[in-house]
Image 1: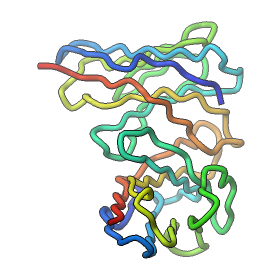
Image 2: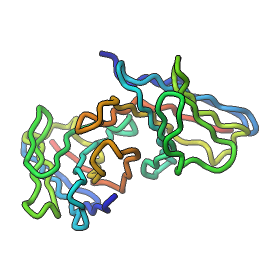
Image 3: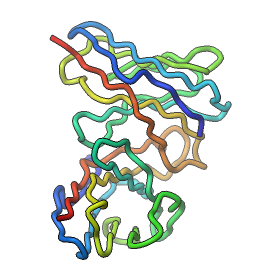
Amino acid sequence: NAGVMQNPRHLVRRRGQEARLRCSPMKGHSHVYWYRQLPEEGLKFMVYLQKENIIDESGMPKERFSAEFPKEGPSILRIQQVVRGDSAAYFCASSPPQGGSQETQYFGPGTRLLVL
Amino acid sequence: DAKTTQPTSMDCAEGRAANLPCNHSTISGNEYVYWYRQIHSQGPQYIIHGLKNNETNEMASLIITEDRKSSTLILPHATLRDTAVYYCIVRVAPPNTGKLIFGQGTTLQVKP
């Protein structure tokens, strides 16, 4: 059973460009979470999605950031007009839909975004 | 979610047990204690979780005090590969769950 997959693993963008980060959850998981880790800082929650729904986006910056989890395909975290402060590691996690103690989140390897 | 307090750093000799404490004095009755670790900027790795009873799996044991105000993660035979930042997180029971709130964690250094 493959784990959470993220691509690309490394992404370099110039200021003003767009960044698209993809996350494929574990098989059978329908809940996806995105977290960001700035250099030398802890992980911060960004957004929680289920298929075609945003459940909690309380950690998303108000501008330039958006996320989706379509019925088919991976979850996408999109950052428009990137700035140097967006340079960070972005981690995706997934969990199964059953609830109870089985709703443990499992993390992917992350995407390292560098904005020049 | 309740706040947790962990020591900033700890050392452990290779082959010995590593005992990582966590205080969560404001934990509510329906909140679980979760432990994750992050090895050198890799994705966080789930270790174990529990509600009231002690738990054990192939990676570690979790000891929760009777009043649930603190817990200890035990790695029974630490190896150099266990060097990582360990996060203790308390979390509302599913299904009303979502975000994990990561603190600064404990940096465990396993030494030869």
